Image (cartoon, rainbow, N blue to C red; front, side, top):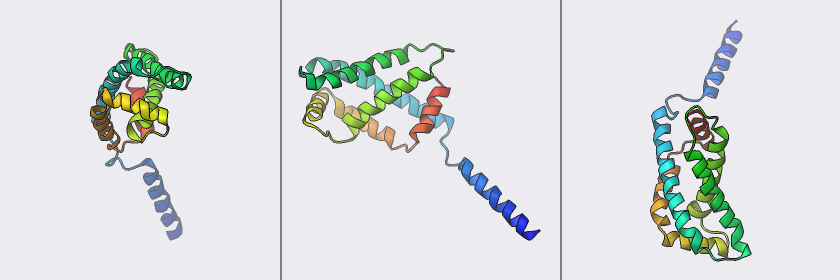
Length: 156
């Protein structure tokens, strides 16, 4: 009987731990604040990209980046056009993925090619350094991306 009771207690503890610690879990207010910050940075990046696109050098090697930036702008506008009650999951996740890629490759890590370096220089000349601090603060929240995506989908 004692062994059964000990196993039952152990299983209960393991189950409780698998649920996560609600004390450490971000609150709805933290997610809402993060979403607000995320959208403000997205607005700033939209302005930065629109300002920088005409300054990108012409050439086949830049076309991929130009296409990616134009895709971000298009998805940002689609996201902004979401109406209440609309099935918005695909729009928000598609926009979030493009935005996260741009932040990862051009804001958070050093450029990995001469072309990326030149794009970063153009972005810096157009105000990216101001945005970089905001992005670093956003990343410092340590909220898991998957949890934030779930929040965005539930609240779009």
